Length: 252
Image (cartoon, rainbow, N blue to C red; front, top):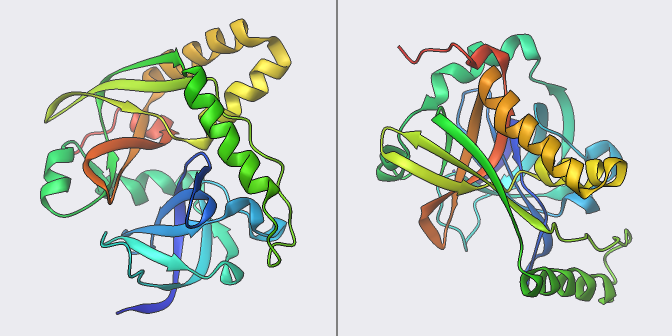
């Protein structure tokens, strides 16, 4: 099937990126009611109307077509005008819905040809490091150039996004051994900026270490992992989900 209409529960909404072909886009992915992963591609999230903008756990409806330039089995080219939020995956329903999807080996998912996975990992260690000034300036320039472009079809001008001055990571253990992944979850960057405005940078980083490095692992969390078509062996952390139900969950 090359096109159709579908529904999905959103699990992944990564931080915005600027590309030469599609401009500012957000990596979004979700799971259909039949528990099949779908990667919504590309999503110019900030161009969506307010009623169309979705968050994690929202159930969305959309038209799709299999993209010609992306061979990933989960990828769906979406019609932005068709996006519609029609419900949500309630907290009381998440455990039963997501438990059958949990995996403990990313190598096995890669071998099966999959590029998205919901990972139950052990020994999670959160860390952060300053992003280089050159990288920040390059990102800032991309957003500014996009903002300055004259687009006759764009009726919703966007304020350039400020690049995050820190990179956040998790070291973790799976059946494949120890790994480290960069966090691309939009929520993590948004939390940093919100807390920096409220408390200052030093306290913001301290509080993030406490929340994401102590509270989340202790109370239970899973990682929504994804690869890119150009780097199929590199798994990034595209979503971080703290769920109390997962703290003592067994895959048996």
